Image (cartoon, rainbow, N blue to C red; front, side, top):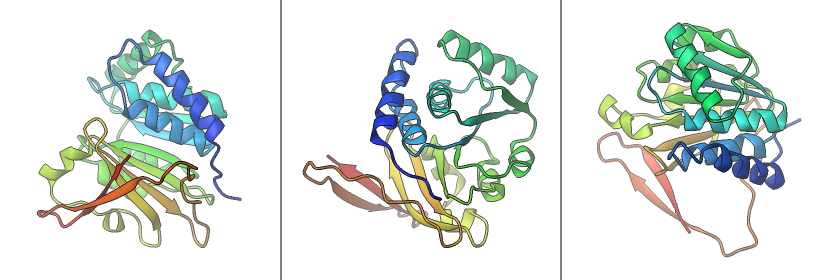
Length: 223
């Protein structure tokens, strides 16, 4: 069994997230993550969040979890963050996930198994370690780094280096959405995620850019 793309579920989650984020004045990342999580029909969503962080992406993930019936876990550093996270989601009209875990993100993720959608914040110093200890589902997984532009000040980043040995990156893409969104599609063993759905419209053009400092390759899609 593998992740299967559903454009109908993706569109529904996208629209629901747009409605939920109307008052937040934060667009782009939330809708994209929500559509992806719901479109892949993910069943175990994990995110990290800390006090003072933008809440829109969390709203989008909560919407996707509600639409697919997924288990949704948010990891926060302390009780203050837990209270703020729950309050911010409530103000957006979205219920907080039943599992809001306070503690060190790396240790918390290491205790979880079978996740198929993980979102980390690159502003947190431990984000790379969190990615490394993630135990993905046999169906494969989607890993996303938000605020990815921040990594430029923290040295080079390569998915193949950060992830555990034996974890295969089927494909990755960097999107100039929000403050940068880097997404990797992960295969588990011989199983891989299907390619993103194609459109009957004229194909988009992909532009390749290589970071001169880190040597990392980024792909940008031009409509």
